[in-house]
Amino acid sequence: MGEDKKNKKRRRPDTDNSNSDTDDSLSTIKNPHLSQRSVPFQKRLKPDTTILKSLKQLAYSIKNPPSSSSKKPVTLADVSASLSSSCREVTDLSLSSVQSEIETLVLSLTKSILAGNGFSFSVPSRASSNHLYIPELDRIVLKDKSSSRPFAAVGSVRKATVTARILSLIHQLCLRSIHVTKRDLFYTDVKLFQDQSQSDAVLDDVSCLLGCTRSSLNVVASEKGIVVGRLVFSDNGDMIDCTKMGVGGKAIPPNIDRVGDIQSDALFVLLVEKDAAFMRLAEDRFYNRFPCIIITAKGQPDVATRLFLRKLKLELNLPVLALVDSDPYGLKILSVYGCGSKNMSYDSANLTTPDIKWLGIRPSDLDKYKIPEQCRLPMTEQDIKTGKDLLEEDFVKKNPGWVQELELMVKTKQKAEIQALSSFGFQYLSEVYLPLKLQQRDWL
Image 1 (cartoon, one colour):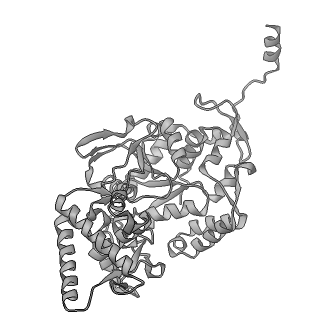
Image 2: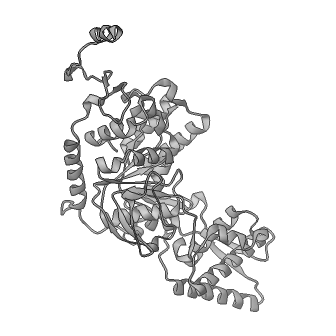
Image 3: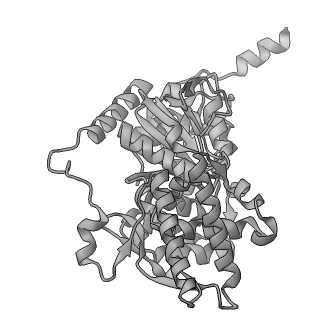
């Protein structure tokens, strides 16, 4: 008892001195959800009502743009006349249309065989040199260059056989009106395909060949992406409330056609690179404090997650903010969502989400938020090369802020993961970092 009185006398009274909150100041967290320890920038946070008011203004400006900027979206057809080379895009086709395209192709191959010329597929090239970034569209598209895949040539006989087999399997799906996964497709002929990456690559070739999206082929990937937050939608007729999905969230349906009746009172969509950060935000119910929809593809974005994000953006017309690692690969993941991937540039019109903002973690945040040195990682030679290669990409050059951040990353040769913020407390991400970012509108 006497020891308690002694400690009580030595305790200094708390003072509220707002002037002491400088860049290098530390403040004691008084939020019951955080550990009682000193953390930077806590006192900079304004009341949630102030931040919410700013977010509502942002959401309103996105949904109600000035009349001068609310023009019809630019399409490839609109800019094709001014391009240095012709480009191609695929479209959504019905099952009957896909079936008809396959039968027309097979009929032409049959005529070629009967004429004594054998058969060959003319497949659009998806080589790295056959892509073009179009600033007006802010996405990567596929140039109109094709390569021959003859059955009679030793170098291409196997790939031509795999192509014919994939076409046959897709035709069966059209006749039965069913969906299968890419893994199912691979296991129909393991000895021929040898590895799933080979059947997956030819599946993309077939999409280009038929001029349809991969979704039109009724072949989907296994569930990967997850969503949680202020969103209600129907999944094949069942209503899903994403506020009641727990920490694990709701798996994003691999077939986007199953998604409908989208309803939300969210103010923004938070796109998260890592599953660990997603779970932190879901467990802290971040979406209730700041109404939002939280999505992750657990790393490299899959087709279903990209389609789902685009559908949300188009139907809800909400700002999309991205939270990725502070390394070249985090920015590459962000660019895949926004500008498309070279591997699937033929379908970029359907897979990209315009105007995604880079919220964090940015290279400049490492010093700004005083991330400890022990939580920063040295960039490898491959990391540095990837960063320099990104600086040469047109979709990076168009954004001066991205260029500045990447140059800083390459110069300092330091990177950090989202989890580096946990050095200030496990809930620092949801309780301080993200609220402060939103308050300051600190995104690119």
